[in-house]
Amino acid sequence: MLTELKNEWKKAIEEELKSYLKCDSIPALAIGVPPKSEMGDAAFPLFPYAKAAGKAPALIAKDIMASLAAKQHPAGEMLLAGPYLNIRFDIPSLAGKIIEDAISSSDNYGRTEDLSGKKIMVEFSCPNTNKPLHLGHMRNDSLGESVSELLKAAGADVMKVNLINNRGVHICKSMLAYKLFGNGETPESTGEKGDHFVGRYYVRFAQWEKEVSQAKEADPSIVSDPSFIDPDQEAQKMLRLWEAGDAETRSLWEKMNKWTLDGLAESYKNMGISFDKLYYESETYKLGRSEVMKGLEMGVFKKEEDGSVQVDLSPIGLDKKVLLRRDGTTLYMTQDIGTAVKRHEDWPFDSLIYVVASEQNYHFKVLFYVLGLLGYKWAEELHHLSYGMVNLPDGKMKSREGTVVDADDLLSELTVLARSEIEAKGREEAVGNVDDTARKIALGALNYYLLQVQPQHDMVFDSKKSISFNGNTGPYLQYTCARISSILRRYEEDKESYDCSFDASQLTLEDEKILLKAIESFPDTVRKAALSYDPSIIASYLYENAKTFSHYYHDNQILKAETKELSLARIRLISALRVVMKNGFALIGVPYLESM
Image 1 (tube, rainbow, N blue to C red):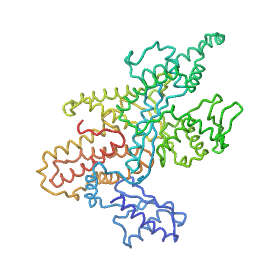
Image 2: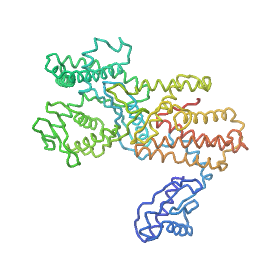
Image 3: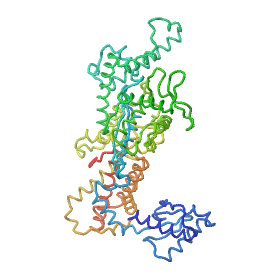
Image 4: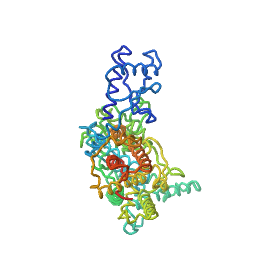
């Protein structure tokens, strides 16, 4: 339809340009969208050909248009718009097929085969077992889940994986704090969720560290006291005991790990996040160490005078990087090397996408380079989906200081706000299960707010703005779709009175044309979002649809249009619109609601 017609025009204009420029090959012709609908439905910029033609782009457009007008060309009306040759299509004549394609495909509409046959692994979340999930994790989780769904919609075989960071000196810090200050309490005895309980001791370690630092400043001689304990040194000692397999240390580690993992599992369930496979650093760090030793034998790594193993990064414009400490303990880099190798052994992927914040750009540049040095060809297909930080209206979050927005608390807060909105509007009876509806509104608000911003950009999360039923929010989209569903329910109740056939040519209004073009472009929109790993493309698409529908609904009757034929045409139009809205919701984690 429109996509095919645009490609036909692209080919026709390119052939005409070759003749015009008297050459066999030219730069590919771009396809754009005019800024205003009255300027057409497709725009072909002719800037790239000005130098070869020795003419201004506007003159080239005029000449190409005149030449094509004298020949048989694809369906559509040509328009001049300065340096652009634009095309206007007869949208009403295509309306029937656009609508029927969407409705007949239903849940599968929008899916493509662009990545068919590709095995793509997506790593996201990757929590530490020393604290609960916070708002930063939630952006990661929303991105990972959405990108996975987009890749599936583009035909890929996707495996979602989570690397549990359950070992290392940071884990030892919460363990050490619990050992010193816990007095045997447990999540059960305090009534806390396990991950919150352990996180409290991670914060306690930071407080203890600060207390010791202040004491040293007040009296430097205390470091010589036999009873003096240096927090960081003690944590490093605990890490060495853990790597040596010390029974007491391992027992404490297993107990505290379980508390956190049980809590995280509950959080994931509430947020609608799932994984196909979990990896644990405790199970892959040894493989990482062996890979580093292999690289040492290959001569791609070097043992330094202090006993550490390092890699020279000057070929990629960086300095050296430690891969094994001088005491033989491993680092994040070591563990990630082992994890990547294990994953490819488990499921030989065509590509692996790491969804990790931009703070780790250096880490992944080094990781991919190191894996290449080790001889793994698949290292060329490793990708870092680097996303910006999530800040609060009053600044950054800091886990060690306990100044973060807890994921569980945020979802609860949004649910309470959603319930208040339902009650304020007197909609309890209409929505049925108020608690379930409020939870779905909260989840939609959260995911949409986190995904509407392009991944690479930093963002500020405002919980009150996110839950608003007006503006560019998840609840606004859900409410729009619920309104469409309400109209369609009323139609179904009186369906027999529409004793006429569907006539798509009735759809001639500008808003109707805009909606038809949007419905037809949904598969292409999904394709673009999937190939660029960018859910914000879907979010923007859905918001524009919602705005157009709201304007259309405000200005026009649907069930009570001038004629039954017009009503039926409009009913079919919004039925197709609901298909793309529902399918789009599923790609960005916004629950569809029949009523709100």
